[in-house]
Amino acid sequence: MGEGEECLSTHQPPMSVVKSIELVLPKDRIYLAGSSIKGQVILTLNSTLVDPIVKVELVGRGYVEWSEEAGASRDYSRNVICNNKADYVHKTKTFPVEETASRSVTQAGVQWHDLGSLQPPPRTFKLSSHLSLLSTWNYRLPSTFTSKFGHVFYFIQASCMGREHILAKKRMYLLVQGTSTFHKETPFQNPLFMEAEEKVSYNCCRQGTVCLQIQMEKNTFTPGEKVVFTTEINNQTSKCIKTVVFALYAHIQYEGFTPSAERRSRLDSSELLRQEANTPVTRFNTTKVVSTFNLPLLLSVSSSTQDGEIMHTRYELVTTVHLPWSLTSLKAKVPIIITSASVDSGICQLSEDGVLPVNPDHQN
Image 1 (spheres, rainbow, N blue to C red):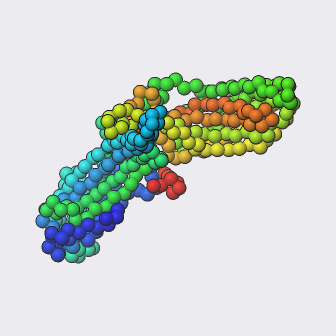
Image 2 (spheres, rainbow, N blue to C red):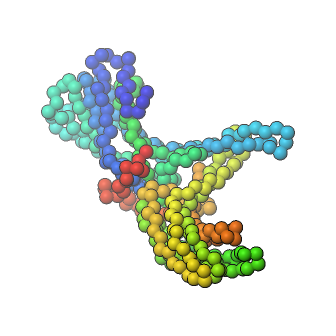
């Protein structure tokens, strides 16, 4: 059965059926871990069921899996599947559907509305409520992510039950931005200065030095923020440098277990953003290049080394100077920290201002 399709029980009388169930949530939003998911469930009944129940769930699951070769040094080899799973949050609320006149009745802190403009059958009931993203994981819910090894996803699911049979169900996926305590554990270098130097040989026995410097006002950012940095290239050779490449890399270490409960890990590096500058750096000269990266709105926050979860994430800004005439290249690497605001005790009271707008390109 596809998502959002109605599931009609064959065990109910013909008139006692659910016509439709709908979830209404704010569109194009990224939720900060620890905030509230506010929305409505609209239930349309063909006629009143016997003690119908509406159940609303907030679910977040993580899953990684990869295949690795074992026994390659012997005369045989076999594939071992390593995997790891976690339920990060699972909240459930159940509400009875009660008949009302053309008025609102507060039932267990939830507003139900009998729309007087609709004459039964059918009858429409509307629930306005919220579920919190707070969890026993100390607010450290990971961000939504997908990769070739695994994924973490969150969704809201509403269902209507009658006599223990599910009559209708609807699911909507959410984008969640994780929070981090990284800034409490690691001192940041703000402003930041990194330098790399290489002595190169060219034209048989001639030598020279290429120096690469990167300057930033800070190296700690939140998703969606602009990264601005200045690269200075000092070319103390008689050759011209033609190409400089700037790239942002994500290094993710996945944690898993074999079927025999042996712990495994796997590191995957991917290039998130890339720019190439064709500004020539002439011989015995110095050139400065100012570059800007706009970070995606949804990024996994950087992880500390103490995390024992499904994955650890770290980021690097890498500037590469290609020196084809010396058959080498010079790289300078800057650690980039992706973090987010601390989750305090009042975050569960956030209004719609507590969620971030999301570009349609980042939706699931």
